[in-house]
Amino acid sequence: MPILETIAAANAAYSVIKTCLANGKETADLMSHVGKFLTAEEELKDAVNKKKKSTLTAITGGQEGDWEEFQQLEKIKEQRKELESYIRLYGSPGQWDRWISWQAEVRKQRMEARKAAEKRREKIIEYTIIGIASLAGIAALVFIFYVIGVKLGRW
Image (cartoon, rainbow, N blue to C red; front, side):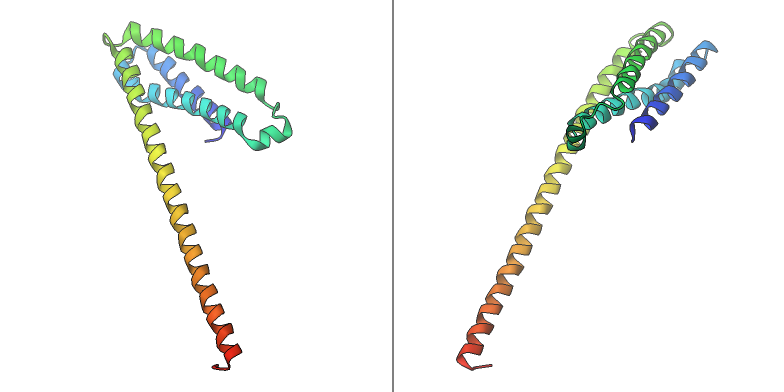
């Protein structure tokens, strides 16, 4: 997701959470919005890191938007602290801690899934290269036999 869309998603989820908490809504109903907010936060961090590591950013100097991204990350950090205090205050005992541990578990699963997808991608590339090399070798052998056949006058 592009950076601006991620920021918009985080801000929208945060405003829904804050409004619902102000109106006295159950925190259990808000966990999906908290999840959206925290997921948007992670996606924003990933997008900023990916942008920093991009070769295009290295070529162009990559200073456009750095301050705004930093400001948004700081804003989201403050909003996360507010959410934590709201959920600790209004949620069931240990709800935030359970959420953090669940989130860490999901993060590990996502990392494992990314690694597995990367391995599958590498295998596909490897098999494709082997296939192309095999076809090129067969074509070279056919061409060599053809040239030998023409030189010997058999064809």
